[in-house]
Length: 350
Image (cartoon, rainbow, N blue to C red; front, side):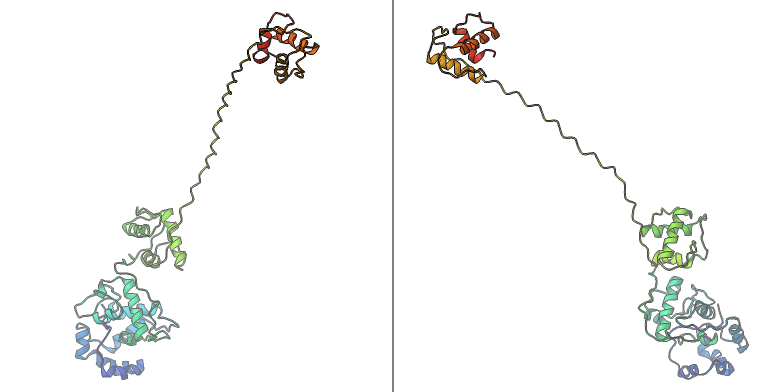
């Protein structure tokens, strides 16, 4: 743990406002040494306040100051953490200040934290420290003066809506870069988290081609450099970053052939109407006779295609039809219009 522990939410000290307006050189010229050896600082630093100006200057020499143009750089934050807690996110010495940024509980809650800061993930501590910086600048950290940090335009801006701390329970990056071909429980934990978000992974713990594809997608969606490995940003993005589950490939289906129409049943033949011949008049007719009955017979044969007019006169044309009817129906060729030839006009062959 660093000798220069400093906590958030320090109670107001009349000396603070005037001292912070002075230059770093004036602090190192004696006033900072007096502050380090004050009973109040000894209590907050857990007994490590007996430090000389020489040691203070040495830390500043090792961690050079950098001026950022927007939010503080990663280097600035690293120098601050090293001074505050030796960069230990889990630290709790029992002095009422916790974690890498030495939050006290009141300040931690003021930026939305719950529980103890040292029990939160590193990513959450980082985000809540940034929120505090946006609200109060470097003032909550005495170590910022020791290492020579300077505020930028975001300090004290009050703009915190775009700072999104990860949800509680987000695990810290294990500290190892994972690449294709590696195996381990940390890879399995990352895979299972991505599977919960819809990625096609089963959590085998082996970094294969499927995991590589998901890593590439996570990095692309979240603006992370396409390194192809699971580093700190890609690790955290599994819990807090953007991800869209891939749409399943459409299943190709072969269209079913249209069903063939069922064959229409052959129409049933209509039953032939039963034809009955009128009663034979009881008289044999021969060529030269005339009678309405002869005319009736002639008209029936005309319906069947014979060239007869139904005059009732038994002439040569009627004789020719009589002879043909008798021949087709096996009737003795008498040439007379008798009972069998009469009936054949309605029921016989022609």
